[in-house]
Image (tube, rainbow, N blue to C red; front, side, top):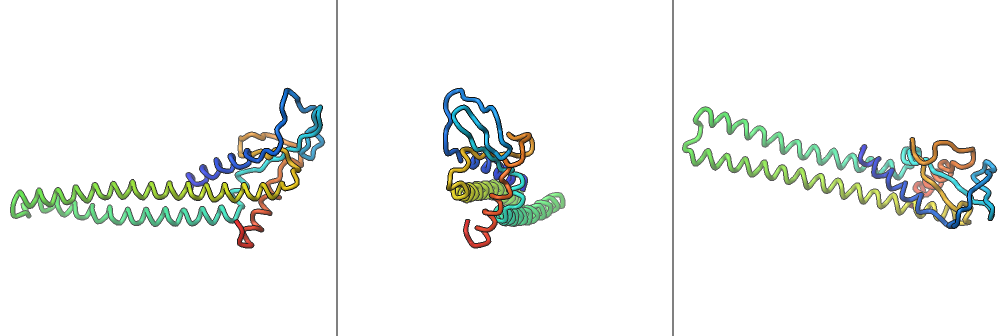
Length: 201
């Protein structure tokens, strides 16, 4: 779950930074703000806003559903792996008991059983790696789904070009303090959740 949140945070950082509709060139510096997310410059005004990624991820229903399905898959993989490991451990304990009690008819039979258990242990390690890779692939897929969804919603949200730039903010992130009017998290979240409720992503 922690990995999912970290990846999703990075995805959202990338998304909001992609939403740049106008580029201001030169060394022009802002000299005043009106408190509504508008910065005045010598050549006009620059409308800025930001989204709090932590709040968005915590309250966006689609992200929560994706996270829940990922956790279920992760738990299923862990249960499967743990069950196979338990069976192998039992077989290894039985092998050691028989070996100590001279329970094998011959040395060759003992070596053969040992090789079989070593092979099962190797298979278990390979399965562990395979399941880990599957989970990583699923995380990447979820990240792409969120990226596509939020990119589309932000494009529609800013259809009139009101904001030249929408920034990302997390705890201790880019925006440490701002005046009222810059944070549009609630507005974007409302759009996202309404779309998801209506079957849109």
